[in-house]
Amino acid sequence: MIEAGGEATLWLGRPGSGAQERALAARMRAAVDEEYRELGERGGAALAMPPGRRKRALGRLRRELRRIRRRDYFPADAREDAAAAVDAVADSLEELAA
Image (cartoon, rainbow, N blue to C red; front, side):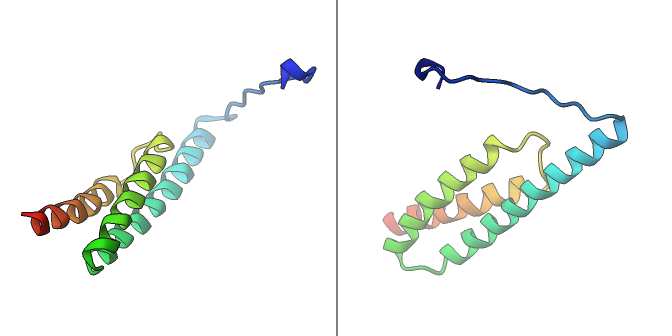
């Protein structure tokens, strides 16, 4: 902390070529895409849970979806599927309440 007499430094890095930049973006997209896929699978599994556990799972799924979206700089392919899985859990709880 600077207030405590510390020091702060910021380093900026740039890819050396367009190919490196594309490769970096592809790796970042693939990593986030995998997280979305896992989230979608957990959403599907939550549909089989009893309503009380499903409601708690929905809260966790929504938080995780927000966390992943904050790092999704190069929109991943599985983004919409993960969101749809979380929405399906929410919809199932709404149907039970009706």
